[in-house]
Length: 300
Image (tube, rainbow, N blue to C red; front, side, top):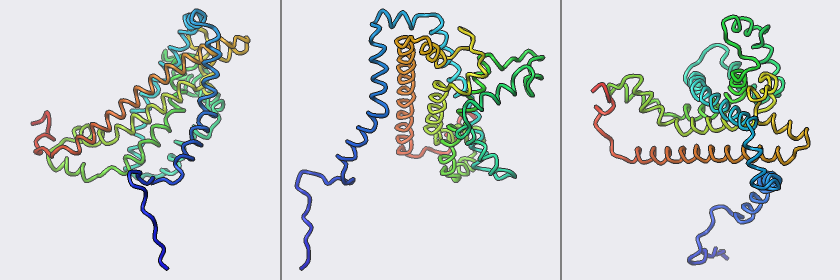
């Protein structure tokens, strides 16, 4: 006898993913155990101070300086990686050269290298008696034990995020579009800004966000090269450790909450920008093609 498969009930669409309810429940439970519950504990500990106590801790000049330094240096390092990481990814995707595999593996070194080792190595290089620092300091450029040293360390640990995020997008980009733009009279700069950059912008924003998030919470590679002078080169993660060693758990939780709220707000803004960029890109693709003089832009 032939078996007959009953159609799905009317008005109830069939799920494309069997067991979705169970999978969703497992995902939410795992996320709660690993992320949400620990974060809720931090907020609960900080709430024990009350609003007055919380603002008193966050209003301290030392805390404000540490937060400003952590987020400021992370932003600068992420911007540097966004520029040079794009160039590195472009070279690895579009060109072949001797030693490419070796250099490609070196990009991932900050992922595998213990951050403390990276901090010690960078300090040895950029200190006043280091291989590089001994030439820079006589010229008036002091890197080790300054905020500039923090930017160097965060650039080191954040570079792989930008490069590895951009590489697949650049590899899948259609070279025919570049050739078409060139054949229609577009300059190389116009091709980069109007053809290549719009295609890789969402991935570039993602890499920037990942590098920025890594830089905000970085500790091991920064602690050796920063100098750790209060209100000069003391980062917020170090200040949290100091407050914990002083048994000031409420103060440490307050600084941690400030970092969480600021980080979440900035990442939410970056993700919103990325979503807007994706929608704008899809609308541009759906729009009818314009005559080729548009490609010439300012030159027409």
